Length: 116
Length: 113
Image 1: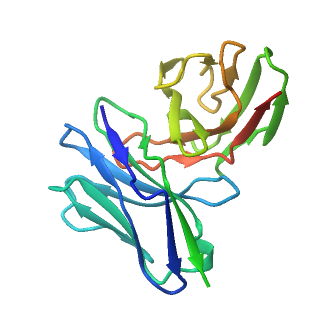
Image 2: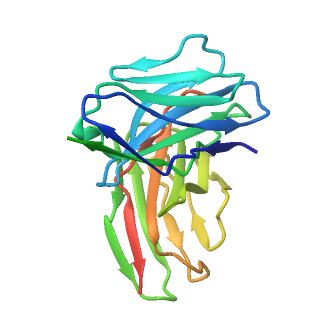
């Protein structure tokens, strides 16, 4: 079974600073994908970035980058130049390749608060 | 515009009543999913469907039922057998593929009184 662990229930960051949200995963599958989602207080889930297990380069998407360390089984999200609008819950998720569209498995999330 | 529509946004029901949450997508996605979110618990999978007329139980399926008669629709029924149904329910859909992102609806907040 797959498992995602996010050990930081809450994080604070100063506006314009960078912040790293931790995510570790556990799976015996060799082929998998890792995802990050943002959930503002409105409740919608917003896709941010993904990384495939065979990708050698870390994924980047604007101010978001995914620090993928396969040997450590970690997939941390780095947000550069934090903005007040980044305050939200952030979820790490994983999908493994086992015969079709397996669902995403989510961690418990990290609440990020950006301080002016 | 393409997307996923969940309705209603807020739902109140008396204890012991069944209630059905609607989820419709016009993204032409084969796969659809239902998740439940409780404070501090993250998202937990209730049911998912990879194709029309087929669905599988997730981690917390007890007390819930689904149907997938059309590609666009995946309604979730919360039955009276669900012991603690008050929660935020999220529906999602995706294309086939390991790295296919899941698109989510706005969610339905169900409160049982």
